[in-house]
Image 1: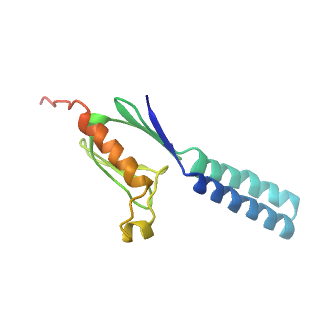
Image 2: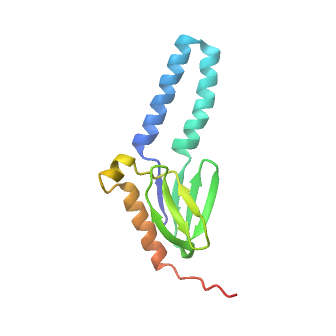
Image 3: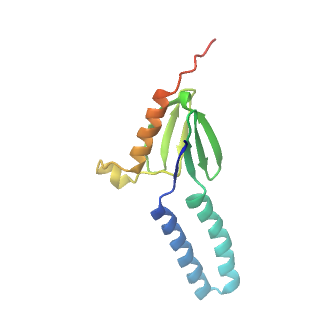
Length: 139
């Protein structure tokens, strides 16, 4: 059964509250037409940054849904994972990295060496990658 992680409820609520505050402020300062523009543009940005991102771990691959698109990484191609403020980072055996926006670790948690949800997700992905059959590369 696939495991799915999304932006935390606190992250979703925080982004939504900021949008609501921006709309109310703009409504009071500039009026309805401007507030509607803030609502539409801000709503799209909140959707893309707080509600759309996710990471799904299946038996064979990692499916990363970020604001700019979806990336599929076979588990056999995962070399390492680690938590960072901008999201988890997945290092690929084939080269390059994939950022996961849905799960992030704050700099404060990193400096305090606290274990967070990002660490738990990274450990789960690493464990799945270790269990995955390795693909041999013939030259």
